[in-house]
Image 1 (tube, one colour):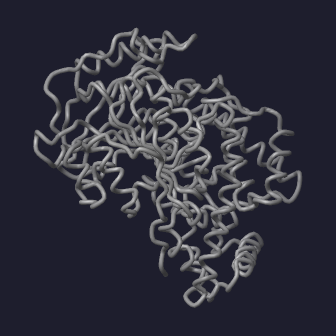
Image 2 (image 1 turned 180 degrees about the vertical axis):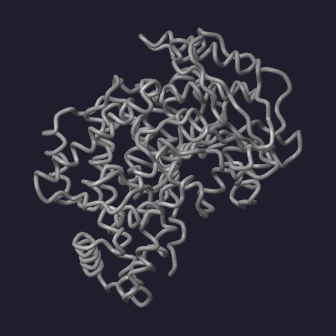
Image 3 (image 1 turned 90 degrees about the horizontal axis):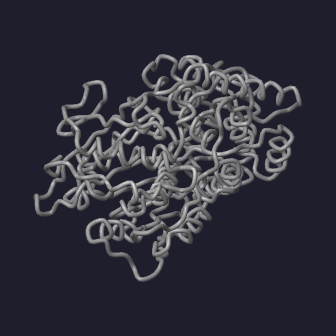
Length: 533
């Protein structure tokens, strides 16, 4: 289950797949005492104490802000630095890794400043380093918040510049073409199982020392160390997609360390959902949002000429898949590449017009338009490294966070059943996650997310028809975090609501971040504007 950007087709038959994206308070702030570290569940006392030790060190060291390296693509006045954390919090004096962080100072006065706002875009595997660019690019949605807060991004452990992990050579990762993820025969399934096992083994061979520590609880502990390094007594946090689960775990382990928290497009944090069930639920939700897109395309047939009904659009989609399966378009775009390209439409409304336009061009006879849009770029060395790394982190975190079925019979039964009614993503999603069935390091029991002492009111934002993080996840977290408020964007399904223009949502986000005030009750907002061709 990947949020924040489309999934990669890591295990499509034939090869690996490709992705389808300050003024500091002077002086050190003392970290909370060990007794106050709300991570001390039975069996986790050592990690809790380790987190306190690491935070105390970071508070004393601070962050040495410098101009960002030229090849990071982060313009001045954004500055970059490093925060040191233990690889294993149970051994705080053992091996250390460095986490890349960046920031831009609040644009308002010193009196207006309310601290740092730390961001995670999801994944797992996404980098948050571009968050300060919302200020440098003058994104109007964040103008008011930027007056009050330094915007802070970071690469989580294993990601990008933060001790990056890898599971396969990046160029191998993007090779094409790949066969249809939907299996025709048992032999197809056997081949995919072999690839999944090889991918899991590759993760261990290339990144074995990191894998046991690639967990959401450890990333939450890292987040608290970053808070201390920033000189902040309490954390202001914005998490999107998987970033909501990171926020939920942080809120459980460190409830008294939060000042304000917004979670947008929410992963259901229940132990039963993390992560096998979450991916099955995602398959169902993707099918629903795919149909929403097809309905929209049909309603705009005068522009796209793809059919006046959902069934007509679906027929053209199936015909395209069959054609590419028989003879990959341009020799490089098969069904796996098509899914990687088309799935951005159910992810984001902003992709509705571009995807429909390319589809329309193809049906009108322009095959090259589809090849240009969907084929991997083997020449993009840096991009391929980023894509491979992001997928490696995704796999490592989800596989290590929780126990997965080890029996192929279970996987085969569940995905065969789902594919009958929800075929768009089911098998592609299954192959992406199947390395977890043979994961080579210990798989943990997820944190029991719940309200702890000192947890402030949390703002939850969710679209009703989100494909990547189904709506039930927001309801689940809302029940677990007492005093939270839920903003529902009704009859909408774009992933990541706080980045969209919807005054009903935008004004409440601003109000909460600037004043801490929430509505007396949950709020339902009308949807943002539907894309226009």
